[in-house]
Length: 472
Image: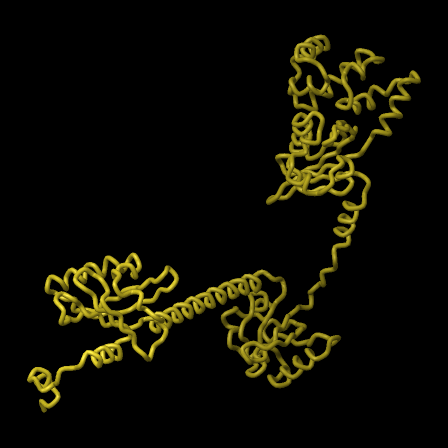
């Protein structure tokens, strides 16, 4: 059959189409049609009457096409238009993105057609926005699906980590089938099987003298009562009496029993009362307690320490170096940390604390190293001795000298050497120097600063008492 074929259109049987009808035919055959001159100027714009989403584009006429194209589309159009003018119209459709007033943008697929006017081109376009919206919806659906997969994998990982690290033996049993859906290694050890062997096995078959329906009914009844006792069963393989504590929940439309298994030797872990007492002491004691890392940075303090240094907030202290609150700074800090690190503890160390206002408070410090392989720390207890210092001064003014074997060494660090030995003998002076040298691990510079002496004066006194060659 040739009727209606190409011969019909070339034989002259088709009458000429009137201009008023031609524009309507072109508009109906495409979503948007542009007549573009050889210079790239838009001569006419035709819009499909069935689609009003383009709005009124009459302001395009008389202006260059590139004025209404996005940057990446300008180059594509210019290359295709140049090929058309050279006699090689593009065989494939051209997708261009239009831009109008920087707010109105949409993609259109154009085909090039020769026109009666010389070198003018008729561009018939199809609106690609429905396709672009569909593609965008597919992309968003794919992204949401991937995010769902990622979330599921994350929850599955957390679930596996919890199952592998909890102390309880846990088994998940389907209420409908009575079969095990999941179990951890602790449950497999109590039941005398490998974890892989438990998957899909009937839960009741693992126990003697229990049928599937009876065991499931007993477990479901136990979940209905808040004060019900655990179900007692005997494992078939290990012959061990176990207690089962069930919890029922619904997942994916199915009811599931989470059963915690406990053996006869299970001991309930009671709350650590000593730990609670230690926390209460830390908060309520009148002595200041400070926890430091091994570099001297404050990890935590109690309210008594905040009162001692006059800090308003915990954030003013935590994270700072304790040396910032000591009169001799790093000298005191080095003595405390070095003794606590090497010997594990330091009984009494006298020094002074200073706050932001410059007030100085005499304190006695005891230190202890806390053995923790992952986070080693040093704990300090600081006691305000300002009242005790006043008593000591009054006793000294009455003529009674401190016991040279104990009290004088306690005063090292809290006063200068001249104040301590003002009414003592050379023996006491020697003891003070020995104590300072020992505390600083034979650090002569630190010992001199602690005693309020110059380095030269300290060396003179070390030579005087025969301590110059003493090893720290």
